[in-house]
Image (cartoon, rainbow, N blue to C red; front, side):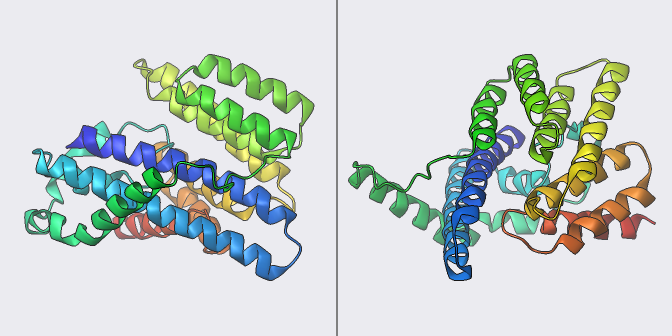
Length: 276
């Protein structure tokens, strides 16, 4: 069940991240508020369709015996690129399980699954390119998307080298610092030595802090939202819940921007406040 949940969440996360990056660029090119809202609406519709695909994938896993796939997928939401191993939290996750809720998962997501199947059939019918892809004009955005493909192959050392080279050319680009922070967190997952893993997480902390340092009025608010949440999780790892709470509050203050992490920040805030 956990493996099925991880696979489903990662697929949804990657698709949404790329689509969000492209939508942000397209929004920057729009001249009117109405045009910008139209792009945001397109992105939200895409995210909903991807969510439906996840529901279909989890439903299939459920029918094949992974009856906790939906539950684990819910618990993993917001942790896809945090770099933290959930092994230490598995006991609490299992203890909070409501078996009654899990028994009703298939009926609960039946409509979403149906929408996903219909959408899949439509894509098979429309074999021609509809021109829906966005042309990436920004050199930095283009390179970040290219490097993202390297990260997906888990070639972390190569990706880090390319990101640092890109940073040398664009030392004030917050997105590069965020990508470096996220990469450091991801690479920490595969490190078994505690001290080495902690060093990588400290590197991630520095990069995320640099995002805040280099941010301007033009910095994407969704990026800042995710950055505050990622940095907050690191401070939680460092047992500094008080400062982590401030970071989650900062993410919440950014607002419910398209592609942001408002829900994740609010959930983390509530969890920490209960623990106090």
